[in-house]
Amino acid sequence: MEKVRNYTLKIWRQPNAQSKGGLKTYEVKDISTGSSFLEMLDILNEELSEKGEDPIYFDHDCREGICGMCSLFINGRPHGPEEEITVCQLHMRTFANGSTITIEPWRAKAFPVIKDLVVDRTAFDRIIQAGGYISVNTGAVQDANAIPISKENSDLAMDAASCIGCGACVAACKNASAMLFVSAKISQLALLPQGHVERKKRALAMVDQMDKEGFGACTNTGACSAECPKGIDLSNIARLNREYFIAGVSS
Ligand code: SF4
Ligand code: FES
Image 1 (cartoon, rainbow, N blue to C red):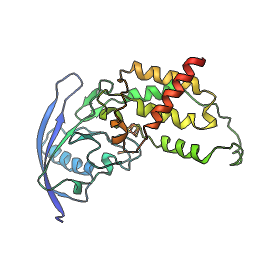
Image 2 (cartoon, rainbow, N blue to C red):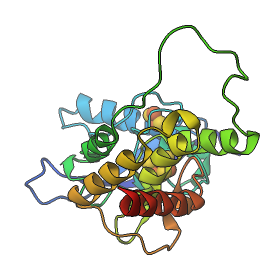
Image 3 (cartoon, rainbow, N blue to C red):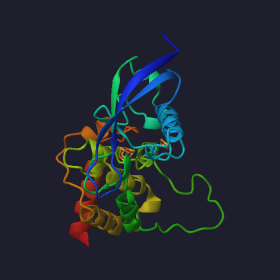
Image 4 (cartoon, protein in one colour):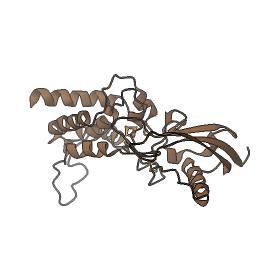
């Protein structure tokens, strides 16, 4: 296998939220197959800066698959062609030498483009804020067996808690629905006794905020779960629907 490769990049450029964007073509050469996708963009940006051109704006933070910032649509798929990884975990060996790679921002009304590949995902923050806090007493750490939790529920809660809030579920959905994200956040608390005190209020408030932010309705296509880098399961959406229904009829 060759150690370096060349690529043609078609990258979405958009100076600001108001202007109309478009794809611009760049050539990158001698990219190490061991480079991450974001390192490849770093190299391109260095070249653009040296030429006095505006670098490409893209989001990133941890570069370890934790923060959910590196949200890019690559060749028509959120986070690119590999399963259950984020863009920062994607390596250039995935792409054949000489291939063309199209890079776009998330497309959703609730995630407006700020510049180039950076979108405003604060709608997710507002949904989380709407959920509020949980009533857990602080103080000395309790014995591990003081609050009995089944292994099944603790595993399901941990799986739901692995959602990193990247927004790929919204980008993958033809309706731009945020149900998978909201269901993961609801589930991680609804499955545990510590989350039960505010569970009704939380379900109603988060779904209400989700609707206010302009996300679309869920029609159960499953595209969200298929493209989620953390493999968040669709059964969480069924749990959210149950939580919301029960909260609605009993409040
Ligand atoms: S559910 Fe998956 S795709 Fe959606 S925000 Fe969470 S980690 Fe990202
Ligand atoms: S940069 Fe944090 S998940 Fe990719």
